[in-house]
Structures are given as structure tokens and as C-alpha cells.
Amino acid sequence: MQTYNPNDTICAPATAPGMAAIAVLRLSGPGAFDIAAGIFIPKNKKLSLAKTPSHKVSLGQVMEGEQPVDEVLLTKFVAPNSYTGEDMVEISCHGSPYIQQKILQLMIDSGARMASPGEFTMRAFLNGRLDLSQAEAVADLIASNSEASRDLAFSQLRGHFSKRISDLRQKLLEFASLIELELDFSEEDLEFADRTQLRQLLGDIDDEIDRLRESFATGNALKQGIPVAIIGKPNVGKSTLLNALLNEERAIVSEIPGTTRDAIEDTITISGIAFRFIDTAGLRESDEPIESVGIERTYEKIRQASIILYLFDLSETGLEEIAETIRDFRDRVGEDDKRLILVANKIDLMEEIPHHFRNLVDLETVFVSAKRKENISMITDSLVQSAVTHPEERDATLVTSSRHYEALSRAAESVAAVRQGMDDGISGDLLAIDLRGALYHLGSITGEVTSDEILGEIFGRFCIGK
Image (cartoon, rainbow, N blue to C red; front, side, top):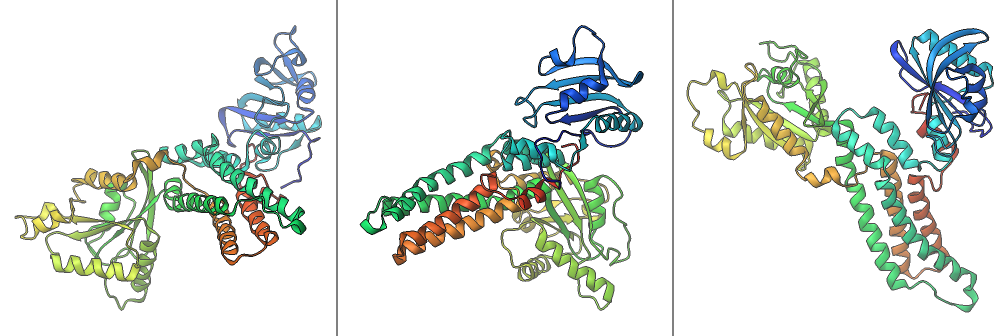
């Protein structure tokens, strides 16, 4: 990313590339109004751009000398009341790629330069319009593909997560300042920071950090889409079930066992929550090398999934085989927190109810016909119920960024070091080092402390016009 220069005026399309009905071009920086005034002629000749108030939309033409380029709407934003906190102009023109490039070229010829990826939002951060966590939420909001991921990004953009981090940091800062003060009076052996209160505070902060870290699994799943693996023996209807869930012919369906050699993935949104379905190779012992690789990949996908749909043929599978498969699954995956949903398939082939039907009901089994798409809604209902077992989590502050999770983990390590240091009776100057570490890591989340490397990594993932 290009180094930020507050004297630069930048420009870029704010809408997606390609042909469309309209496009929006942004111009931000100290020369935005002069550059816009040089290429824009308002239809109302009595109202110049200089006299136009902030947030006012003007109809007019973009001109190249005496030649009109396009009829446009121009919106003026006066600093600091703009997205970037700078003087800013947005031009809504017709969506022809030629027109867009022509207007951008006029801006550049008049003294602007093309913006780097995420530079508009980076300027908003540097000018105090957003903190770093909120700036990252802008990218998440743009990339959101479900109601749940949108809600999470919007909550973070409104500053809910930032406030919790800032509150934690402020509490630590008060005690850190007292510890630092003690260092100035080390010869007098004075103690300004009450160690009992500090222990209580560190315990509270540690609990809060743990709660935020534990929310990462839920937050990341809702943001990226909850992974759901479809497992079972070969030829029980896994691919047919995937096609029924997606309502399209996504996977190859064949009567030949072992047709699915590799995982097939696709995503759908159910009740505002994105689910990433993974159709896996059939679970069985195989001497066929390619199929064996597929089976091993199946277990890898199971380890990655949050919810498992264990599909079996109701007409051919007994309780002992089901129990053995579940045991084997638990032994090989080694995690008890995954939600396992039993799906009894091929009820359309049943002439009579099997004797173990009641036992399966007790196991909360869903009975379906994937081929006829019968009772598929029962599976989707169970998936949604699994995703919102704790509905209050949808409204809670959830960690969705691996960067935030890492920063919280490092802050927790620093807090633990302070507590251990107090137990060991170490000096105040050593406690101060670990306190500064906790403050640094919490501050890196909101941008109260940062570096050019962090900014480049974060904003480099944005689109050009954002």
C-alpha cells in the first residue's frame, strides 16, 4: 500500500467494475473541490460548487474542455463530515466503463491520483472517523453473504466490540499508570497501586478476555458460514441429499459405491445463516488407493466441520452398526463438541417400520427420502436449531477476526504473567513491562497502537474504491 500523504487527493470507482446502469466515482483530499469544480458544470449556473453546501446533490455535466462527457449527479461532503473525514466528492455517472475511465482520467490530469486498495477507509481511520476494528468491519460488511454475517459486521461497525476492548484497556491503564508512578518513587518504597484491587481487576479482565476468545468459534462460523459435513457409508444417498439441500444437481449421483472420491462443497443460506455443506467420500475400508485418499480427506473435513449429518440407509442399517460408526467417528475425530445429527434415508423404500424405529426416535433421528426430497425441511430446521442453540449469541459481542483472536490471546498471556509476577513478588518495574504488553495487544485491536505493517496488511484486502 502506498504511504499515506495527507496532501494527496485520491480518486477511484466506489462501485463494482463493469457495465451497469450507474457508477459512483469518489474523490477525496484537500484538492477534491478544486478538481471537481474544474471538470463539472452545474445545470444551475447560479450555484457554483464552492457555494454548494455539504451533503447537497447537484445535477450537471462533466466536461472535457468544451466537450460534455456525461450528465451526472455530484454530491459534496465538507470535512470532517465525510466518510474519510476529508473534503470529498462523489460523482454518480452512467455505468459505461468508457465513461468511468474518462472521468477518472480527467481527475488524474487535474491533480488527483488513483487510490490504493482500502485507502478511503484507511483515511477514515487515520482521521478518527473509525477505529481499526470498525474499519475492518467495513470489509466484512461488504463481504457478508448472510443475515447473520451482516448483523455481526454491522454490530462491529457500530463500535460494540471496540467499546468492550476500550473499557478493558482503560481499567488496565489506570493501574498501569499507578505502577509507573511507583517507579518514580522507587527509593521511597511507596506503593500507589493496591495489589488486592489489582488482583481482582486482573481476574475480571482475564474472564472477559476468555469470554471474547471463546466466542471466536461461533463468530467465525457465522461470518464464514457454518461447515456441515455429510458422512456415511458408500451409496446411502449422500450426494442425493446434498443435491436436495442445495436444490440443484451439484453432486454426481450413481448406484456405484465409491463414486464420490473427493469432497464437494457449496453454501446456502437458511433463516439468515450461511451453511457450507460438504459431501464426502463414503466411510468404509478400501484397498483402492484413490478411494482411500478420499476417505482420509473425509475425516479431515469432519474435523473442520461444526455439524455432522450422519446419513444411513434405514432399510439396511441396524442400531449396533450405527453405534459402532458413531464410536469410530468419535475415536478418530476426538471432539465431543461437534453436533451430530442422524439422518435415516430411503424411507420411500420401507414396506414396514423397522423394529428399532423407536430407538432411533430416542436418538432424535431425522427420517427422510433424499431421492423424493421428503422431510428435507426437518434437516434444515435441525441445522438452524443447532446454529442458534443459544439465540442470545446472535445479539452478543462475538469475535470474528483471527487477528483479534490472536491479539486477545497475547493480551491474556500478558495478564497471566502479571498475576504470576504478583504471586512471585517481583518488582514493580517487571510488572509494568507485562502490563504494557497487555495494553499494547488490546490497543492493537482498535488501532490505539498500530504500525504501518499492520495497516498495510488490513487495508490491502479492501477493494480499490473503499
